[in-house]
Image 1 (cartoon, rainbow, N blue to C red):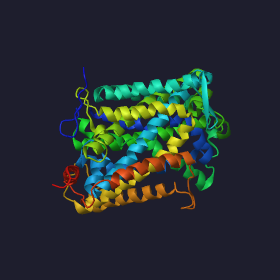
Image 2 (spheres, one colour):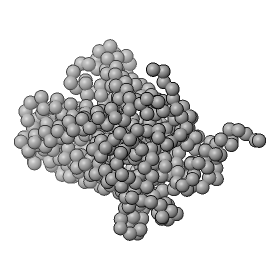
Image 3 (cartoon, rainbow, N blue to C red):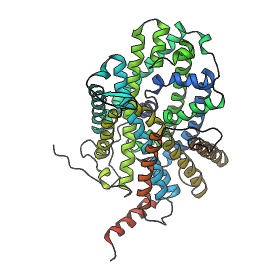
Image 4 (spheres, helix red, strand yellow):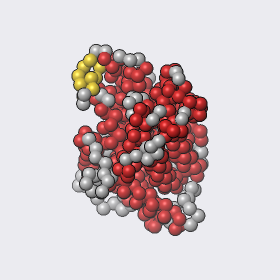
Length: 487
């Protein structure tokens, strides 16, 4: 069949093929990638067992506030593109593009992370894989052709799944998340059988600086609940329930990460755990005395890679589509496959980036985490601000899921989410606060270049368009008038 793409309209574009469990697992699965296997040892070393858990509890609390904000907004505006719609109505086109572009960049960095985590995992399962057909070195890591091709094949498969439609995407996501939850249960049983509470010491380490380092990683690890709003037009449940599903997914992720941190700490003293490459897998193997159990966790890690990758590709492609349909970025990104009802060009664009990522070596893991985290926090802060502005400017807007019984409670949640996100964002700027998170220059480069492109798109938009329910229609009229030129 020859593909004939459609563009430039919203109504009836997407297929409502996701039920409650599908939507819940898309959000939860997007938050559970591979970091729980590779990064846990560093968290325990930086902050101690209770310090790391406290950082995740605090970070999870911040994400809960942001999640409440999103829940109200997605119930009021259940349209594909999530943040794009909330910021358009609350703050206008230019801020909508900045926030949408930022969260899209955050999603894409997670996808790049997973594209590199996949061959790294296979290298653990098949030692020596990385040394086959060496190509070059990046930041001290020898990139092998076979190693990179493992990531390329995975990128092609995940891109194909998303390209073929939301029915296939949600089916795969539900099956894989179910397996991931089973692996988490095995991990808990391993801690109960072979863990030692004495190994959880030191309970706290590194002081506030250690706590801040772990807290700084939380946005990257918890981003994903907001994938649910991106697919709102594809979820066949009432808007109010979509909001509840979003909050439930955040609670599930908080519990998951706290359990993983604590159970991993039971295996061995923190100083020994740091020596392992895939810490959580090695921890279970140590607790149960057999390498087989480590491989079970690795299988869970691969499941986490797949669920996260699928979710973020779904979310990022819908955001690019929404921005394109609003005339903010090239129309090419707004093309819809006539059979699969997916934003096919947007999916292929992101898929191409993920194909290239493994050729950057394992250094891309850290660059992606650190480069994407401030983008995510920036977008969350803007959404929280839009939430507050809409509570003031448009109090009568229908809100099937409403935060708080009174207007004051809802506003307090929005303000708290905004302030906490701003504080978190400031941590990424060296020297601005007493405790800051210094990133590698490559991470600043990823953040800076992506946001620079977004700013250039934003400043190309017509100015003076006020925020409101008709903002998108006015924007499209202005853009069309520009293209026609003087009459």
